Length: 349
Image (cartoon, rainbow, N blue to C red):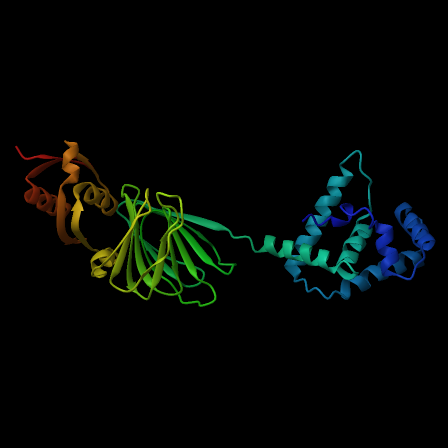
């Protein structure tokens, strides 16, 4: 709501406000305002009017902290400047406007004052967001304002507030893979949004895989409990939450919202945080996408059908890329050539 609320309520003119909050008669108030606006007040009248303003300012039942008062004054000044610069408007003395604004806070229009105060506080509490991207071949750990931590894999992008000012702590994993270790706060649940999937937690640790090249979002719990839901499905309806405990995993289809839950060894899917990687019956297309995130490379296929080959393997970040490529090719009768950072996989001749 516009703080200049008395302009939106014509029946409450500045004159009315003064009369309602003092013992002045209508005639006395009119004469005083006229003299004040023309600058012809006597020193005693000016002192009386300004003392009345100060009394109002000091008797508020609504508590305003210094930041709120500063923002209120800035908005008052901005609105006054706007009216001064408006050829059709009246120039009104700043002190008088402050008097009228103060009256709103202290007379029988307290609900309007509360609306204005809440509006000020909402502006002061607006979240400032940070977006972080981790280049391929790198890994980064973030510490949030509530001491929760997030480890991001290469090729990942996340958006989060610099501080959590609301009843819900919420971040957006825009792409990639992240391991979340969330501080428990029973009064403020933590929500992760990732490609149409919402993960709700109070305090736990879990891995979210949401690379753009994947057809589904994968959530794996290592500690605690989370609930997962798809925001849309093939009927454009929200479906019920699925609860996950440690060593449980759910995949959520990005297009149809279908959910598949299974028991797994969570360390196989969160091991990348310690530099240990495992592929379990993954397509070569998915393996290639994740390798591109782990290493600064690009993998291409000589034939499209090669992307559908299934592959299982384990390796860690101390292994040479050449050894991993050899293992992939040896298991699937493929060969590879490398030109700089470009890897080409082809059927073995």
